[in-house]
Every structure is written in structure tokens, then in C-alpha cells.
Image (cartoon, rainbow, N blue to C red):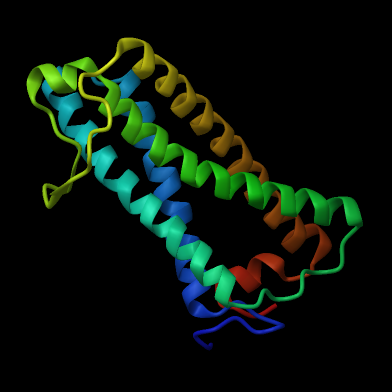
Length: 189
């Protein structure tokens, strides 16, 4: 398998980015749900939140890499499918890219807008290596709530689209037998 995509197959870099992003999205959704709904100890939640912020930064950097890689690489020809399925696939991919950008940005801005962050000197750090800027000094409860809603609804939307995306890939592989899923796993149909 080659580094670059070809007209027939996905290169290993594209597949690696795809599967790492998929795993990271699922991890972030699970961690976000768990820390907000199951963790009652504020100190433990703080640790989970810092982890969530750090991996959110990685997710943002990964989507930027993915966009650049996609721009400089060809895309293999899609399997034969009705026009509406092709349009739905394109729309889902565009929505995924928008949400993969919106989620980390809204999360960072939500944390930055929190008045608690200013009151307690909390910084948006990435794995303790560096600090992200804080555009909201002082914080604002109203801005935090707006950004929280955007972050939450973006998480619900990406979860739904990922579920449909995965189901469609399995349908293409199992029902249509067109090798679409195998191509994303092995690079060949």
C-alpha cells in the first residue's frame, strides 16, 4: 500500500488519519458524556475536563491535517451508487468536517468564557505543555451558556452522523458488496 491515494485505493496516511479521527471522536464523545453525567467529584471532573480539552486540541489539529491531506491527494472513485446516495455521502462528509472544527473550537471558547476559569486561575492547557489563549477575560455566564449549547448540540449531531456514516459503510460492504469499507480498512476493494 502506498503513501498517497490512487484512483482505486486510499493510501495508508489517509486511512490512518481516518481511523485515528474516528477513534478520537468516539473517545471524546464518551469522555464528554461520562464526565458531565457520571462524575460528581469536582476535582475528578476537573481532571477529566483537562484531558478532554487536550484531546480536543489534538482533534482540531488532526482535522486541519486531514483537510490539507485531502486537498493535496486525489480521492478514489466512489463505488457505483444512485445519485441521491452520492449526494448524501458528500453532504455527510461536509457536515462531519464542519462539526470536527466546530466541536473543539466551541469547547475551547466555552471553557474560556467561564467566569470560574478566571476566578480560579484555570488555564486551557494542552497536556500541560502549552496554554491556549483566553479570548474572554473576564468570563461571561451568558457567553459560556451559548457556547455550551453549541458544543452540546454539535456533539449530538456528530454522534448521529458518525452512526449513519458507519451504518452506510457496513451496508455498502455487506449488502451492496462494493468493497467500500474494505477499501478504508485495507486500501483495496
